[in-house]
Amino acid sequence: MSTLDRVTRRFRWLGLLRASLVLGALYDAGFAGLMLVAPQAAAASLALPLPEPAFYLPLLAVLLLMLAALYLVAADDPERGARIVAVAIVGRLGGALVLGLAAWHGTPALAPLAAADFAFAVAHAAFWLPWRE
Image 1: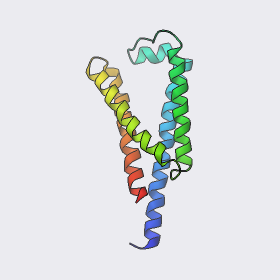
Image 2: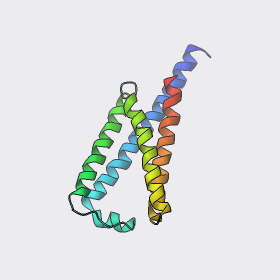
Image 3: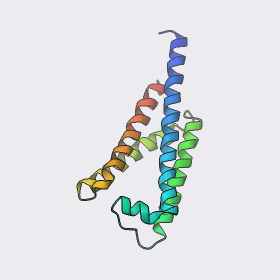
């Protein structure tokens, strides 16, 4: 493979990685927005009770917004944000596991969220690992 082919291929993977990170950021920011603006509707659609005391939901929303911001930092410069990408992959897999177990044990509305987290983990890994070669 020529140097030009390697560079072209590397930039293709880099673009896909950046896109998956930006989509992950939008996904997390969207959920954070729902948690802040319409918590009752979000909880009802997932058949979940709202957490008590009430400050937990805004706190989780702030943490999700921080995560979204870190995704954008990594998307801006994946080479410098490689550790963030690695944490994102592991974190999404952990989220998929926790949400999947919750869906399995009686909250089936969480199954699509588990699938989304798993899909993000796979996408991030699939686009990051070849790019690092």
